[in-house]
Image (cartoon, rainbow over all chains, first blue to last red; front, top):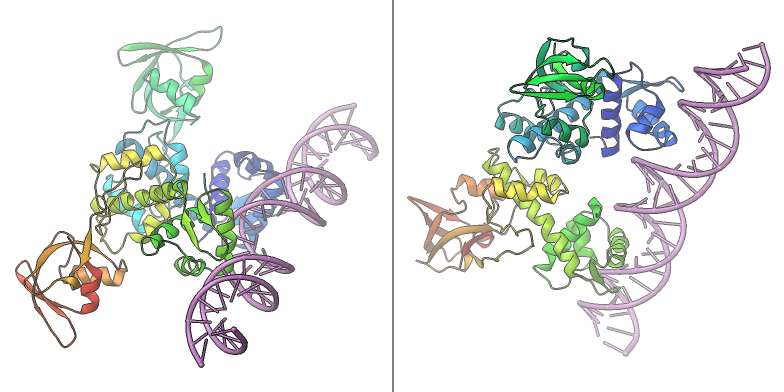
Length: 216
Length: 216
DNA sequence: ATAATTTTTTAGACCTGTCTAAAAAATTTA
DNA sequence: TAAATTTTTTAGACAGGTCTAAAAAATTAT
């Protein structure tokens, strides 16, 4: 088994790899709120274990073994988030920190039974896909509402910003996963957008429109 | 918050305190599969935090603050065990190791909601009482079946040995929590006992009779 | 293409929790 | 009650993971 620190490094590297093929020491340090020197030390250990490909000064990528571990942790994180929201009635902005701890519970049998108990959910409360026990998931293609033109519409299916503040704002505006939205107008001055959400009309900033995703 | 090691020490000291008022360094070392020297080091740290009363060579007791933490961890352990058995259909001999990890999840709100989700269970799958959020529980008085005479009876309400091997044996003999048993005979030669359990008759050794508990 | 800046690595240190070996205290035995 | 044994503590070391300060490499700017 791997240590808690190793698991967190692998998970961070996986997430950062979605934006950049290769991940830098500083990116990891920022993601984990640690220092570059500490990251270098850990990268050597992960490379020794053949969980990452690491060449001095060249950044890192996950090996297949490292990616498998990362996806297993992400599976656990998202299943526990789903559990917290669907079974214990937490709000979608409250569950991240708890799941950060729960994702390190090691039993594979436990997580498979939890998955079954909840009827094999495909997405967590924020719309992120839940990998199956082999690490497979179909990455639903999403695009920001900001990319829509007037009169175009879509189903809210994910968020780019997972911060409690953003999630609470969306909740208050009824902009939650599964809702159908249509763009009724775009204000030229600041590129803010007027949306039709079910029976109500909402005005969102460009910033929000960039971080709120719909299925393609 | 306390470290994982600190939590495990406090929990062990609590459990050992049920048998002896004062707990020795060696007892703790044995319970945690560690060495006496390591225990001494940790006892100093726990004493500095005023979680235990510690005088060199005199053994330790928990302070009220230490006991509160220990009971909170035990509450979490037993609630998670109940969850694993009642919701995820694990057997009572399979849940201890998983709960050992889950008991360290820190959120108090989580555990209160879990408690509510399961309708505030009073005992875990082995019959041990679940403390409430303030650490209170009524310790049901139990006695071993070995203390019964012929023709006396009782309801199985707990076990003294929590090992998977013992629990599996009990399961196979239908000697599970809640079952009513009556002593029909005691074999003088080895003090083994013949029990009536619902419609069947079972023969148990003295050893088993000492570790299987009924409500007084 | 050289200088300035940024990023990354190395070196050395510290903290937590563990260990072994040896010393000190307590307990048991004779 | 003195000797033998057991228990506990101290001393010193080590591994994991982190840090700061300084050196080395890479990148950017002039």
